[in-house]
Length: 105
Image (cartoon, rainbow, N blue to C red; front, side, top):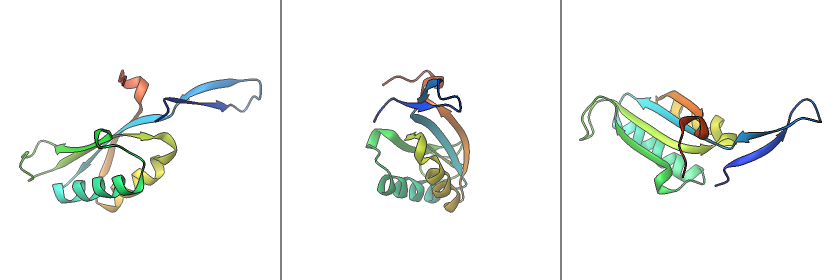
């Protein structure tokens, strides 16, 4: 995955770097919804096994209670990610540029 893309701002003489990867976290009322969203994102997007994960959100790690889905995604795919999360009754809690989170791979 690329780390940054160059974009041209409204002023044609101004060019800036924009993070091409965002960290996204979403909460789901149950593990079934989180796991279904995870499977759909793997099928839909070009992501690796290390880019998306599901875990407990204050519930039981055994698969009961609310669940979190977190991942690294290309910024241009965020609308699709938000749609998948909503389709499985989840709510996006965090969407930040990877660099802002202090993450480096």
